Length: 464
Ligand code: HEM
Ligand code: HEM
Ligand SMILES: [Fe+2]
Image 1 (spheres, rainbow, N blue to C red):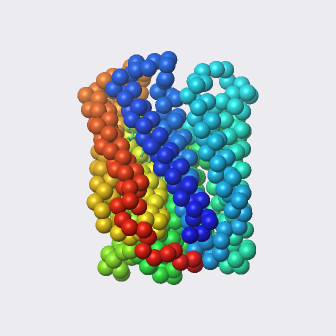
Image 2: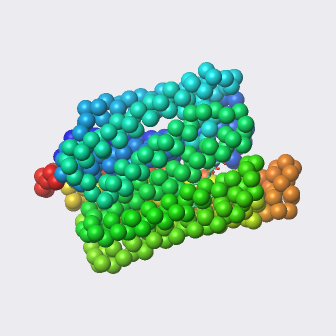
Image 3: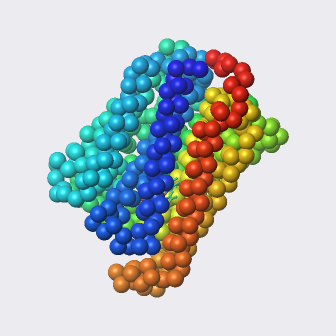
């Protein structure tokens, strides 16, 4: 095994641990909706939610990095350059995450000043980590970029997928720097913050997962490079074509000029197209290979990714992306329904495929015959779809009763929160969340016990 693949196993382990932490705080956050005064002033909803969504961002980032470290030496036929540095930064990364998490847990209140921005909390959703940690993450990403680019230079080789990946790293890093300045005008602040959030999940991460999926497809289906690269270019073009100005769907109600209503509505309505392309691509590949695959769990998860990405991001996003509808759905549980479905479908399913690819290489092929992965696959999907539906019903109740009928007053908001449909949705989310968590338990069981359930790996890993 290449040295960078050993590092990627470490990244995957860290990612799976944080995935667990994320689910725990997800469950806790959901409980506040059923018992609103729970742990009041001891451990507040806001902190629980921060831990839920920040660990989400970090574990997915770690999983992406692990996926790249896994495939990079195979793609370029060369050991990754700067491995020592990469190994050190892995531990730095873990330490930064642990310190930030502890600070969030223990320092929940305080004044809002420069000191807080630097050491406690920046207060921006998804990227609450204080500035010192942001600098740390940037340093980790720079080392990562050096590994990728350095290897390409040393190997004197570059593939189409690698070009897309390297070029994607540039905007990915630049929009993250958005998390530094702290304008005092709320509209200006939100204006730039959306660059980060939207350009990550709807542009740069989509391109990144597109590259990862291309690599996995070649690996587990034996799809030809020519075909995956051709699709990748088309998808990237469409993602960027619609995604960049699609940013406007976050500019409807934050004090930006009116023309964003038209621009945002139009371009973001086109955003499902590349995602539909990915579904067609995966069906095409599966058909071409008569569903034959070297790794069934990975194949199941990439198929789930293609559909989950299209439905969760594309269809659920499209549902509320026109300003005429967003006026009512904005910021309700409807949004939360889309947020869960999209993150899960587009990214979680994709990285789970890579975990199984890595597991097959380290534990041998026989473990894939086990039943545990099917249970985990079923519980995850059943749990997520149940949660998403519960949230959608709750969100629609808010939109109809709180917004359309109630006129968006505080009183109407409160009344909508007492509506039976809303409450039923919150209970459903909790119940299905537990099912989702069971899927995680089975996943961990499957990955941990796989090597023990089968004899040692059958064939030694072939470099290149
Ligand atoms: C056991 C499973 C889970 C439970 C119970 C859960 C619960 C929650 C809760 C209660 C919130 C706060 C919503 C609010 O502020 O009103 C939330 C937010 C969020 N969760 Fe989860 N979650 C779970 C799994 C996941 C997964 C697997 C993902 C991603 C793949 C995810 C991504 C998010 C995101 C992006 C938000 C912010 C959404 C928004 O504010 O619009 N969660 N979650
Ligand atoms: C993988 C891709 C995607 C992910 C992970 C994702 C995730 C999210 C999340 C987490 C939010 C809530 C942000 C917040 O307020 O905290 C959100 C909002 C939104 N998303 Fe997506 N999304 C994706 C793709 C799309 C697409 C393709 C569309 C349109 C077709 C879309 C339309 C929207 C809209 C309109 C909102 C604002 C909702 C509101 O007004 O409350 N999203 N998305
Ligand atoms: Fe967006």
